Amino acid sequence: MVLDVNFADKHQAEAHCLVLFVSPAAPAKTLDFEPSFLLLLFCLIFKTETDIAIIRVRVNEKIKAPQVRVIDEGGKMLGVMSSDEALAMAREKGLDLIEVSPKANPPVVKVLSYDKYRYHLEKTLRQQKKNQKRVEVKGIRLSVRIGVHDLEFKAKQAEKFLADGNKAKIDLILRGRERANISYAFEVLKKFLEAIKFPHVTEQIPKRMGNVISAIIGPKVQQPT
Image 1: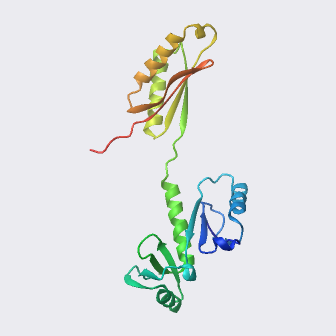
Image 2: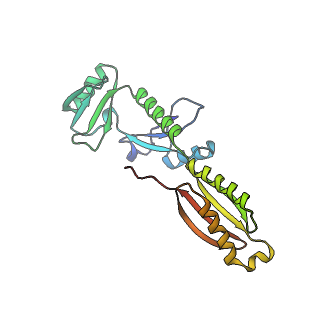
Image 3: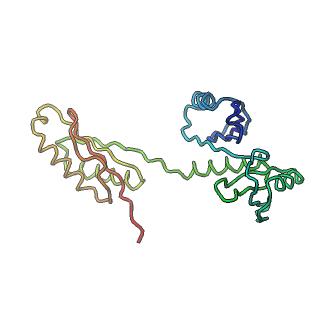
């Protein structure tokens, strides 16, 4: 979903502000709120959404550069012309003039329907969201008295987490008199980590917190050859 925000604050009026987030619910809307209030409103209504992008876009008369490099609606480069000339051409076609590369010299603009531009932004965001892999931290619990079979089984479990691109947090729980032999507990955890054959890196070295010794490992990034 793309919300086109026209700020009430006149100092913000030099550009549209597009607030993008993925929602299957509604089409694009135009709202007129202060930015801080608007983002707070989004967070309250869409509590499960965390991916929000804010894009400032200059459109039509809000493009202040005296000259621009123009791309037409078919993607053809038309060259450099004055902003007034480019805007007149866009108006003649019933389209808008959108600044797509403001840092270029001169800025690059495209003749396009603004509604179509918002639609493509939303489509791009959805695709990025779909392709994005969220890294999770998976938990594995061990005991000092873990047997060989269970140790191998849980090592395989850790390898699966790593192969899926996730991290693994290993917690070795100390009970009763086991707390008196901490060095042995660290040896058990070390043995477990050595049993994990999938390439990995240690993100948190084994350390004790109360009755738990913990370590965190993550998949090792393979360097291209």
